[in-house]
Length: 285
Image (cartoon, rainbow, N blue to C red; front, side, top):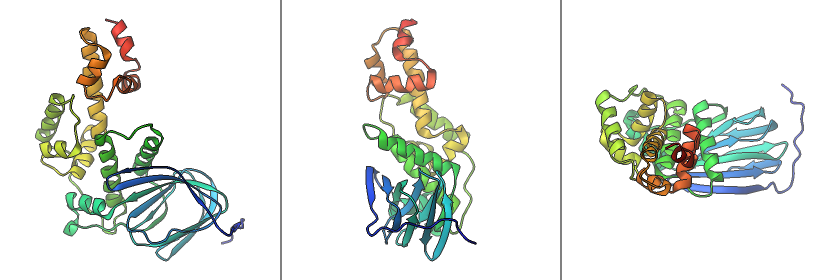
């Protein structure tokens, strides 16, 4: 097969770091790479390179496999830890480089009950996956946010990404239980309702359900149709609305009592979920 393009090589291809954020074993970088050939090198972390620009003609390689393709936004490559790779683009390219520590992936595999408590992910070139795209775009939004995400949200994204990589791209896949049991779900719901004003974390909610954190994030989404973080925020917004309608508290006080960082944080989520602001709710009283 022939390709109707010719790469423009430059002596020193450059990679520009545009944004950076880290949550535990997960690191996200927004990058812009010049045209030319780039050596990914050997890195101790697992890497997922998610492309946000294009289409662009590219050639990439990993673990002996080489591919030429027309690269489109939403494509991603998976480079396991300590595996070398390279890429060569005909034009400047923008991407998100998501690095995951070996400990994070190992702990997730062990918690999910992988055979022998271990799992290896396979190199992949030009992959696409709607769940991975959703998580990576959420991470991209956090890069643009003025302050780091809440711990519950960041931990949820990290575990969701690790779980999906293991379940969809492991060398040897395996099956998980499908949903949370009714008693497990009831314990979580009751605990969330009793602690909406606190900084809830995935480890404590997993302990309430009697499962691991990766199991919680996976099974909760399958059971409730949304992430743990989304569910908690929805319950906080509903509680805040009820308190505002009671007419006895200020917006700042309601935000504090429902676990929001500040009243603008409450306003942002209330507008997103209910289509109204706290001030508009108060005016309706």
